[in-house]
Image (tube, rainbow, N blue to C red):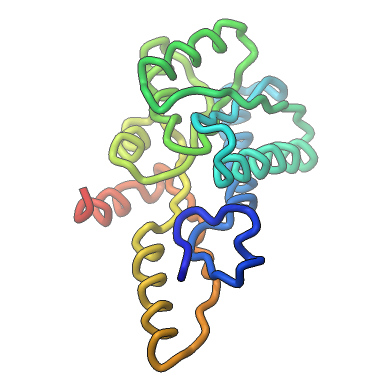
Length: 209
């Protein structure tokens, strides 16, 4: 058995390997990115960076959220800013998520958003409708997210290499079945996708669309 994509807490106790993203460190990268764009796009040194989570309790999303908080705190420590974080429970349904996002934006203290999943595509659409310039990023390579980066509504997204999650897991299983090498956990990474490399990524991902 090899777990892929999400390794629930305690899987190590079963001596089962996991092929996927290391979620807390990935979240920290997202937090640093989110704070960097908050300063660049708003010019403010304080304000709230929302951490979107449309599936509270999901171990991967909770770990990413924890990492994002660490990343924002690390950016504050290095750059003299005082951004705070707030988890916003949204929805995987765009209409519901947008209503929740718009209600929170009405308070006027938000400088950015980090989706622990793909809800940054919804935040980007809300920003476009309202003419806002805030930091916006998250995870995954779904087409609306990639197109959002291309259009400028999304600043970044983190890649967890779903191709490797299947290919490496299959290779490990084959290797263990014959000739009998023990499988091991494999971090599929957290590469940052942004305006600098989006064209290459869109081309690469087109074969999966």
